[in-house]
Image 1: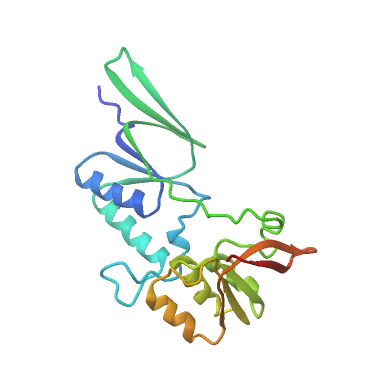
Image 2 (image 1 turned 120 degrees about the vertical axis):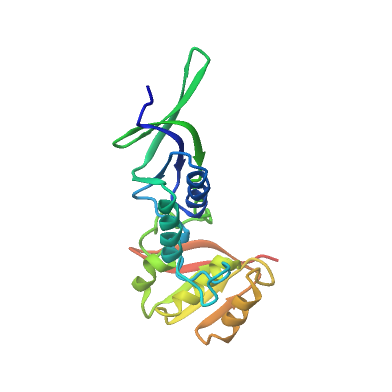
Amino acid sequence: MVNKNLYDVAIVGGGPAGLTAGIYTSRARLKTLLIEGNNIPSQCGMTDLIENYPGFPEGISGYEILAKFKEQAKQFGAEFLSDTANSINLKNDNGTKKEWYVETGNNKIECLSIIIAVGARYKKLGIPGEIEYLGKGVSYCATCDGAFFRDKDIVVVGGGDTAIQEALFLTRFGRKVTVVHRRDRLRAAKVLQERIEKNPKEELKLNSVVTEIAGTRKVESIKLKNSN
């Protein structure tokens, strides 16, 4: 007797990797369930502009491209569950039949295989004041919190694509945006570097690292150290 609740594949993660996996498995006619964390948004989904993905010469927001991925997976039969995976366990019956169990907040999903595509976490600086002022001036998401910093002086730490893209986005709100980078040059794509250099609201602090975040009830200042 076939268990109608038994999936061929359960995919944990609703970002680009999980959705792409869902497209492939459902196209292979595998019964697929994709479990999306309902309180853990994809970092891609919080990106205001993606312009290095083929097929979108004018760029596209992270939210929009994820919606397109999801619609494509649904088109081939993938099912979706908005819930948080709490544990994954293996059941072995007499050494012949192996099934996995994914337990979520409200469900217990049985499947024959699992793809874990839970993405990445924000990289923290690990300096005094970072945790204390989280939500009080410290943020890891420009598109989420940029509007809170309207007409403020903003500091972005990092020199890669993500940092520079966020810094450019924040010029919509901030009075001035300072990019602090530990090396003597940025690592972001040249097109992003060119936009930073041309933007009158942007300032670069190279060969510098942030050593402390300070304030009273909210962030008021940072300490910099020369990284040479």
